[in-house]
Figure 1 (cartoon, rainbow, N blue to C red):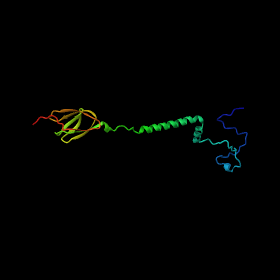
Figure 2: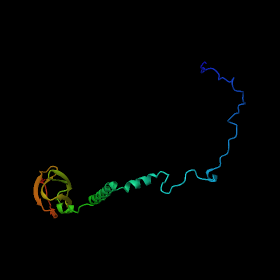
Figure 3: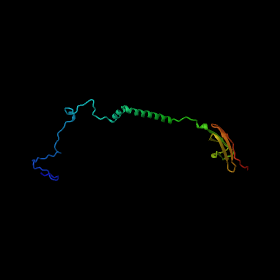
Figure 4: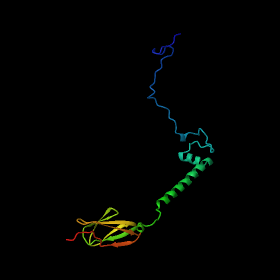
Length: 176
């Protein structure tokens, strides 16, 4: 006996020829829907739920286990403590008002266009009418400068929260 070859047609000499039906066009038997079947294939067991639990159900089942309650409580407590610390940090601590450390200084000069320097910083122009400045309390060195005049220096001690008026302060100018 010889083995059939792969490329050889199948041996049909022993069986009589039957007409071949096209399976794509033959009608299939109709199966009734499950509701009309006479009985159930698997009896229901009330102790066993066949459906898998949802994601929420699985999470709740895990949370009910005692070993998972401690981390859950710990996360809740730490969240509460963190929110409390954030609320306390956002409220500003009342402190002394800035005006308690400042001095209101009014300076005037009998000559217009006189420049005023305080602690070697330019403060502005002063003239016959007084000009008000707000400076820090402590020692203040004032210098008055005017063109064609000799500058003059004055040092004063200022107390916090005070109001001081100086003037008229004039640089030394030659007489004409």
